[in-house]
Length: 358
Image 1 (tube, helix red, strand yellow):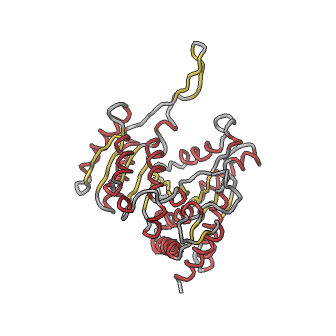
Image 2 (cartoon, one colour):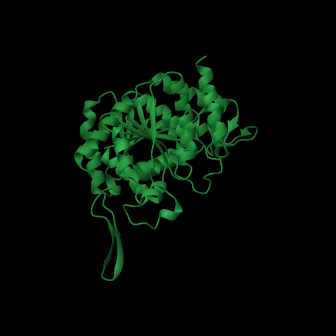
Image 3 (cartoon, helix red, strand yellow):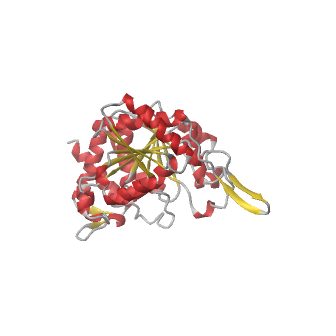
């Protein structure tokens, strides 16, 4: 199992380090893991002049899975397009065709009190946002900033090919089939032609999955429903930009964006696994970041790329055990809990993992 470890920028290396501790434990237990680290993002730009060096791209291509931390930082925002840290991640997604982005939002019983939402709203919450990841306004052309009649104009293009919509729709229906058999497609078909096509293609795919209940919502209504009655959702399938926004909204249902893992998968099952949170430069290096989203992303890696649900279950069980013991990082701190840092939380999960094998 070849894993490319790309810690990146900000808190990325810190939270990824805690996931690597888990992987090293599994290696000691006899799992055939091969880990190789490389630079990506702002740190890669500082070292090589490019956020995605050729060596990193080659490593990512040859790996069976990619464990990613975060990219970015205030100092890089003025760089030209193509050299910003975020461009490295977009390129990885596009070049490896990681078109299906899984973003589960689950309310752990142990963290009901950490969420800003009432327990009656989130108790039992378990939903999956499935985001199309390689098209839409992030990749559509034309794009850019130009001057027209002496005034600056910014332009991005929402673009979807029917085949791109169909393949993510199939993934959505299959995901729902393995859960509670409910799929909600989110679009803005009342205002955008690209989304009108989105809805039409999803409807065309639906007859292949007669056991799955399909519904549609406009994105504004979906955003409202996520905070009013989130438990009505099972699987949400949506486009790139809407999925980006809705999944961050859903993060707060789970208590913190520091609790949300994600997986970006291609048609061959290869995946990039990363916490949903960003690089958070304001807390980088302070040992306060929550590593659980990265650790839960590692569980997703074993479940989806390596077909080792047993290991994924062990990791998720270890996280639950640590939360049940009362340990909390600052973002999920509650009265009566014990505040710990990034490394202490990671160490506790590793210890719980080791104990689960005895």
